[in-house]
Length: 190
Image (cartoon, one colour):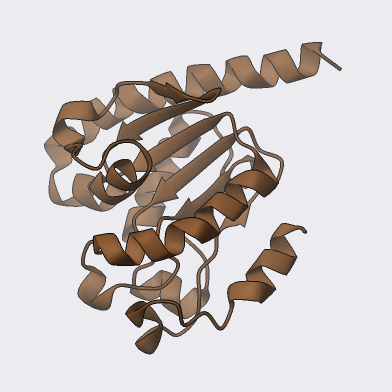
């Protein structure tokens, strides 16, 4: 199976109530062979309309952060913990994440990233620790089964709290350095 097959399998998903208000399922986009995957919370209005993750104001900020960190967006894979827009852009409920995580696991198996960045509390709780608080765990690496996870603030949070941008930038510098090291290792092993 490949990512296109996975998208086709879930484009009409009705596994949780989020399907009732969505325009379309937003699976993710980017390089299917990237060692870096970014996982956000869920699609917003612009993402739901366009079928692409992180294209609204938060996505524009993420693009600026990635560009400053010299990480081309098209070279990595970006997705969300839930694939349908939560009403009013609210944080996904645990039941919704529990339902969608099976799709994310399938994406992980196909892409096989070595670094996963969780943006915000929802993916951090779903993938790292159900009791995690983003303000306490952001910027701290966690390793599981050979995969390094780094939680950081969601760009939407940074838009509401510009003072936190400095901390997020420190996190993205760590991400950049780890990502470049992985790319270097891949080049040397060829």
